[in-house]
Image 1 (cartoon, rainbow, N blue to C red):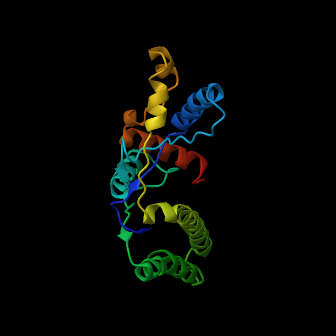
Image 2: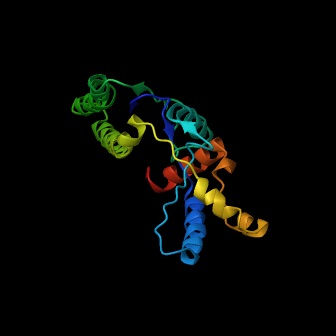
Image 3: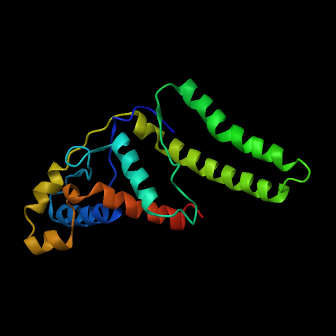
Length: 192
């Protein structure tokens, strides 16, 4: 569940494209006049993906991989535009089930240790998810549209070999492939 509308474009960019763009613009800036130049490396104008479409890419990606051995068939993301409804749904769908498991763990002859551990694991995942949502809340609640015109202009000065070596072109991003690789990284390094 995410706050906000699903039609907002996201500016997601693989770090290698950002790094290459920094190298290209730094080299150009070193040769330029003493003016300060501002460059944008973004996807919203040239290869946009909305929050809703990214959600669909995430669903497909999580269904292709196992998240540290856990099934991901039930992963679903809804967009909630009302802050009150968002907070209510968080309580009902995230916190209440964990509290129920904690309560059941206290009942005699119910595998209490296993349920307690399950509740701790779910709560840890819930807190991580909520931290990520809060980190990106400003961006998923507002629409941004940046263009890469300056980087494109600089790239025209580069040779074809340099353009291939320093891939900067966000139009080449295939969102489903990128999202699957991202999810694999999250499963390995974040959702431990």
